[in-house]
Image: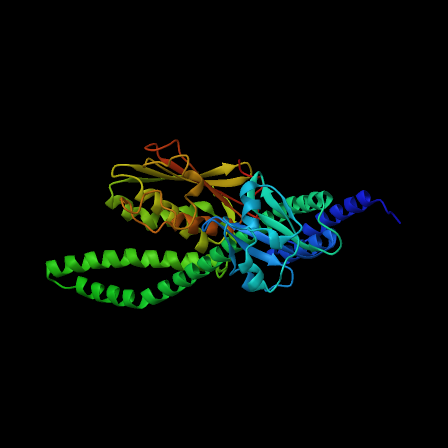
Length: 417
């Protein structure tokens, strides 16, 4: 059995390191630090006080045999307290007769029902920044020594790092929980809003269609405007529903071998009139030979409708949009190229994020919910494809590229670069 005190202390320091790094639960960690301090220094009690930056004071985080909730209610001022002096001066303090020290903060002893007779306190720092104070109280035999101070200083350094890490984990968990709650609320809103808006919208479209048949030209003209607005609103509702189903994994896919030209032509026919109303040129550019892909055309067509709708929205009157397709390294590459406003390089990675808008909401010109490309990406990636955007900058147009698996497979034959 080893009796060398220095080796015994070294063993205890190693044990401390293992103990403190075995948990990231802050409450459990604080209690372990207290227990280790009492064991290593052979004392009756120990306390951890952490610095509260907002109120510029120390607050008890843990103390031997005390209720954590009660401790949290006990503030310790930086002025006029032993712990405050240790924290401010960043120096250890050994007091072997606490009753004779005017800095002793009696309020703490009264609330904790514990009277310290001797005390050793050391500052807790991480990266030269003070985070709190670690105290050991009432040595069981003899007085606190310089060796005790060295041991507690090492423990305080290890504890500061462990507490910092545990706090980071706590903050990350809170952020994750908040994001998860926000995401759940958003999904519930999408489902509820799209459901509740369908009924009144159906009534509006029904009456507008009826009025459109009236002989009076003014009534018919007004009805046509109402019908156009209602149709646009229905499109937005369908987008909300699609996004909700994608996020909830509620969409079912029935893949089959289909010519990509069939899908692109269907999207072209759907968006042609809107493009013409904006006086744009909308063209198809693909070979007559079938480019076969494995996909569900009922889900792939809406993806290209959303991509086209985005191109039409951000291309000014007189602009040109080309919908093309070709073979590409064993896959099928479809593109939607426009001569629109373009995208700045810093926005390119973000345009597929849900509800992301390149424009500020206070100066918007082009409308939309910011979910069209999100839906397109979901519909394409779920079917084994990949989508990305390219632009040379503002005013230089944008190209949306979609790489699709060839017939007979649900995966790309090579990763796109």
